[in-house]
Image 1 (tube, helix red, strand yellow):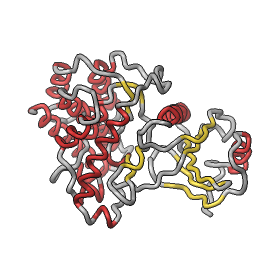
Image 2 (cartoon, rainbow, N blue to C red; image 1 turned 45 degrees about the vertical axis):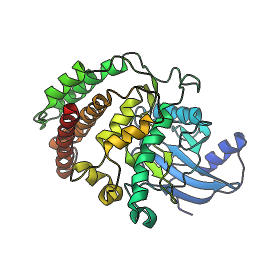
Image 3 (cartoon, rainbow, N blue to C red; image 1 turned 60 degrees about the vertical axis):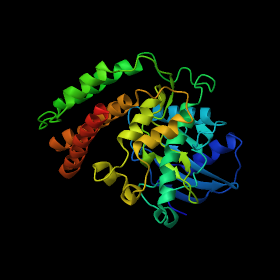
Image 4 (spheres, helix red, strand yellow; image 1 turned 90 degrees about the horizontal axis):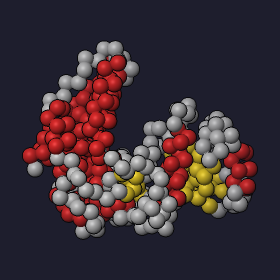
Length: 348
């Protein structure tokens, strides 16, 4: 059994809490800390014949870590009973006083693999399976977009009013804030002003609010070991109520293509290739959605714009000596690639 730092998970405390929740008792077995998201901690264990994954914030909690975990637990609970592939919430501890200041929850383990980290022989050896993996990424997202957020109890989970109107100014402000970092010369991003102006001029006027994952790309999907299906969408920390087509735009913006930077950061699956082109992702989504996809290029441009600005933040920190230079240079190159990709979507 792997030793877990008691400042991360205090198992006697966890046992008492689980007993109080009426969960099966007994010793903790097969304890292991899992890899995954860089922000939060995942620990898998078995107790009383049930297998759990505990999720909590990072060892050194940030200002909003507990609030993020509460939101994650709430959205996972809401998705239980839907056909969205996601871990199922088993129990949540909202009280920060129970586990040394950290909110945590227990969810079902996912029987799957992250294709940006590893690719089993079945998937590596069959381009037809990889092609269907891509389509499954789109159809699984459509399943999420089809959920009635009000019916599942998430009416107050976000602020959909004015959601699209806020996006460009919100991210331009974020980019401007990097100027406070000593050593950052400011953004050198060709096309920045043109993309921002195009987004403002072409913003969709009508859209349907729904549940957004907020960070929907291949690294946040677990695929089935025995086929192409998405076993689970994971890492729900950015979820909210907004325009679900932003998630589809995010998938398109990060989709690996021939010879671009995205293929380099999508690991074995991006390197293996054989994935469907973006237009087939859109078609697969459209078959399972009532949403108007006529402005989907706008959503893809928004995703390129937003993600490029997010990655530029690491470049700015690298210029200030707060992150490795090689990392900053790599992410700046990806930012430039994203703005170039935005230009391609704009040209339509």
